[in-house]
Length: 468
Image 1 (cartoon, rainbow, N blue to C red):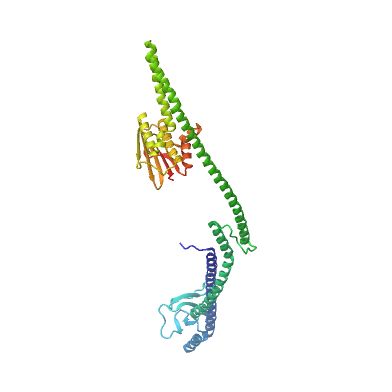
Image 2: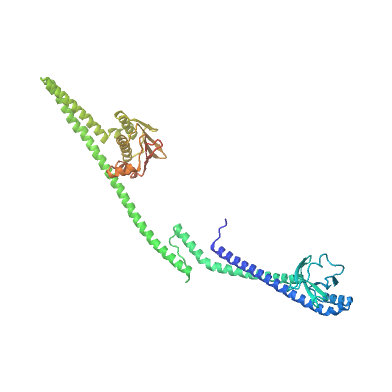
């Protein structure tokens, strides 16, 4: 489909209107000239027939065929539009005619006189075109009738010549109108095209463009309004830039605060882990040794059994404290790296809970990773596996850690009941920020975090973090 601009549309509309008007006027002129010339032809034919009927009456009564023939022959020669003249007797038989050799077949019966016919004129088709056949009675038909055939050929040639002249005039007017249409369309569309050019430039980002040479018309008012809109757009753009910069600064500060908070949190975890491991564990160990000594020295068997039981309870508490210390800050994370730490945590999780947990990785260790990213991955694995126990009915969990396109990719998927939008709303209502905390950890590192339902109907967490 051809796409036309406004100038072309205006130009084509003017030309189409002009040619439509020319066609309409041509048809009106053709129809008017045809009717007018036909009426004139019939009137002249009537006058000629009346003249012949008045003149030939005496010739027919005295049976002077030569005078009748001479009369109609001279009349035929003097009038170019007269195709033929026939004199009929009172019975309708041909008395004289102007045909050179013989009467055409059917010409006699082609038209007959009728008293109730007001015009006594009939159009007859012939090889030479339409013939207007006119009948005029001689002495009210008692002597005979005069039939004259008036040809429209001369009239048609005249009309055709006038239509040629009209066509030439129309072409000249069309050429002039084409120039006028071009000038008018250009004067109308040039301001609009300038306005479109400026609008396209502003849309492309050049806010300094303005419409110039504004005239005092509707398009000029539109251009002035557009310029005002562009000025307002610059002001709005500047305000947006200012707000955006402020927002970016606040976002940077927020990220720094989150990182600082996470760092402080990890430092506190490390300190508590160390205190639990060093001080609390040592105190419990001393307590266990003391209980064992007391149990060995006890003389009462009941007291000895009570001390052994207390020692076992203290030993169980010691194991729980050591597990808690490891969860708070696993030493393997600092000593062996993230891959070994995740592998060990998954192994311990698999032994502790009745869930088949598998760890897949294609790397032995990741050196191009900072402490914040290491902690983020470990805490996400820790939080995700804890959520599997608390909130799903999964029997199988897979943890995958790979490097793709200079990024660390962590995928945790299970075959549980999946996660729904209502689960997020419920967690938010209960102030559970586990998923939100995982997402925050990733985003402050410049990574991406997504959680969705996998093809098996379970939950799938995908984490991507950039390497250093």
